[in-house]
Image 1: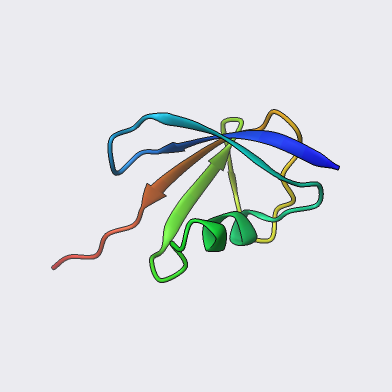
Image 2: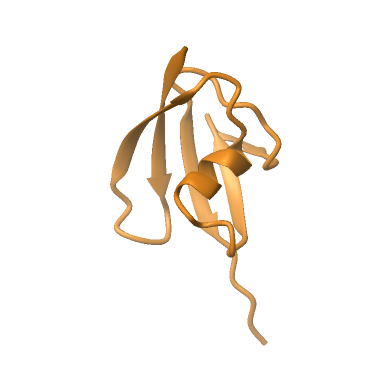
Length: 71
């Protein structure tokens, strides 16, 4: 079964993308589908910080913040 999640990239153009994914897809799998696995992101789902192994649910709002290092 497919579910819909809404992804907002907080580091780029900040537009919201509706994405259809398989049920039981993790945040990490979602990032791999966007070929973004080589960067570190802070993940916020429905207003709460989550880890990459978090399983997404239908209608989740996913905000992705690129983590930066500096010095």
